[in-house]
Image (cartoon, rainbow, N blue to C red; front, top):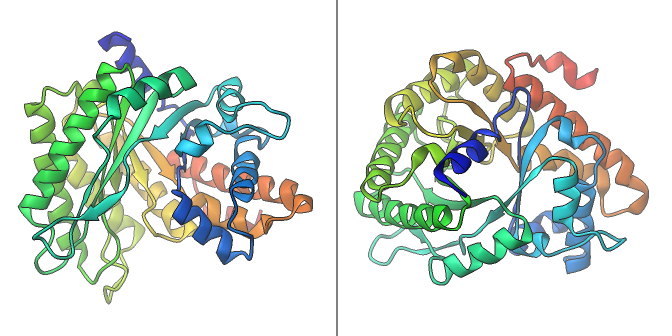
Length: 339
């Protein structure tokens, strides 16, 4: 895939009213979610849940891409159709999570670095053959009195840059995800300062590694006061801070920006997305959503692991996607939740 093709592929994820479903939960995380609804933590139940998501009618009206876990990109529906083929038939681009999660950053208590570079290029080549045209790598930064340290920011940024280079060599669009965690007691101002610093440093390293940023996607946190802070950020405050950060720290040439929900409730994530979208025209690149739990939580509750609930669960999915589609266009109204 040429640079021009990578650029076009990156931009193809950004269409009005559409976003990306992050269905790439690890086995550990997926088991935790199954456990929360009383469903056995078994491979078959994980497959059935992903099948429910990918086969839901009309999701292509709201999605341009879906992020998958390794087991999902290799898995099939009840009738033997590969999940990837189901998505491609709907015009939804398969995206593969390729990092191998986080580990303690030795010498830096409370901080982690992401692993998974060993053998990555060979894995990317295989994922391309399986149908993936984009990939995702997540780095994690916590806010406290002493974190994140510059060493941890740089260590993760170097890994992200190496990952992005290998993706582009393999003709895959890299989705670079430096997540500044919502958990904590930090203020909105502190979150803005840290997110700006993390993104600025990361893009410096990406430039140093000669990353073609027009052929990549940034997946980033919204800027919010911490979950334990005494004052919850309003949607207008979140939007203003988030747009300021993006405007100052993200090069205008980037292929686009998608927002993670990062532990927010589904309604709060949608409300914040709506407020950001109303300010988005001030940014030089397109933005949209890439939510996981903020879309899936109502689906899991409606499903409960029962075959007879699949249709209701898929309707819950379509409703959540529609609400986020409206929010992506700045047209969301909470009164629509009950309509």
